[in-house]
Image (cartoon, rainbow, N blue to C red; front, side, top):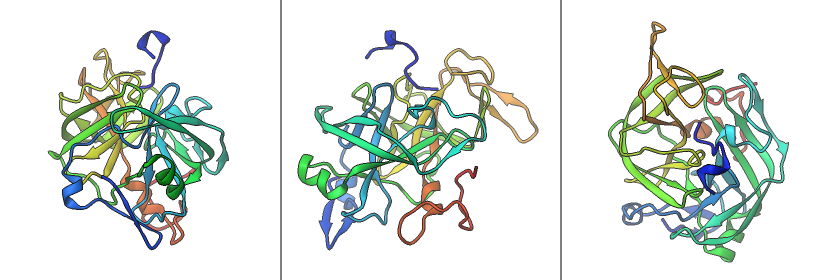
Length: 274
């Protein structure tokens, strides 16, 4: 997984109207994706995010990987909901400059089973972060992305971006004890590395988040840690050395109540249940 493993690895503007967070216009979405609204963690990348239905008075949210959870890697089958947290990160501006510290007080959802995500609630609202830092959250797309679209992966940890396309999808991706589904495989231009874990995958056409970067095959090994393999329906496996992957994020929007809380019992909810 693209978590920083050792110290040797190195250290869309939104308008607010009537309380609603209005998404980027087509002209804004067409601009280059920058490091704006990404959040640098001590060992991973993350981003400031919102649901399509979020409002300015909502508590802001921070998205990263399940394997970036402050308590360490989550076991296969483990799901966390509504756990207290005191995770902090550094909110970045468009050029990678540090704007200030943000703090989480709750893990809304985290797992490494089916997908690889941790979604935090921050102590500040979207309107507070906008007025204090000029920061506007990236919006989670409510639709599954298509193969071939152009994407940008901004890593707050490395303060750089990768640009490529979605090559295809892996129905099942396996790495050591963890299994993920409908994973995004990039083309070779996105050769993400350790420390890019948790970076948002942004659709370059819409400016919305369609996934979260989480792993890549380092050594060509089959289904071992840092060497994920794709598993076909008949059980055969294949590894692509040097290829990197991400997990779908529209799944969150399939599990939301009318007041924007996660309910895993909603019909059609794609997030993993405990």
